[in-house]
Structure formats: structure tokens, C-alpha cells
Length: 81
Image 1 (cartoon, rainbow, N blue to C red):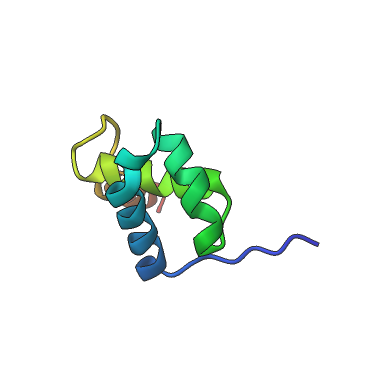
Image 2: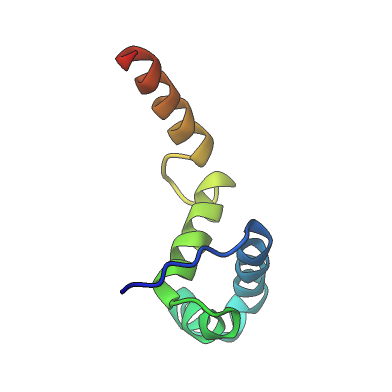
């Protein structure tokens, strides 16, 4: 059986902040993520996704923001009903 535990927004925010603060101490973003992920109890891929999402939402990285994604989902729901 798979155990799926979702961390709280506060834990995710702290983890992203930790990666950002310590990113310069590592040769790459991935190296920083790999180092910090076990400390907060998640796999590196999950933390990397959180960091990337944060960067997109703050305009640092190209992509569709969380707010825009939610807006599109709401519009789709309205169209289906």
C-alpha cells in the first residue's frame, strides 16, 4: 500500500526558502534539493517541483502560474455545467 502524505503549506514554504537560501553553496539546484529534501522528509522530486512552482508563481521561471491554472479549471467547470 502506498502512503501519501501531503506536507502543509508552511512546511513547503520553509523548504523552498531553505533551497533558495543555500542554493549558492551547491553546484546546481538539483544538488541543493537533494541535500535539503531528506531534512524535511520528502523526496527530491517533490521538493524540486515545489521550488519550480514557486519560481513560476513569482515570475522567475517561465510557465503557467498556479492562479492562472486555477482560473482555467474554474472556467472549464462552468462550461461543463
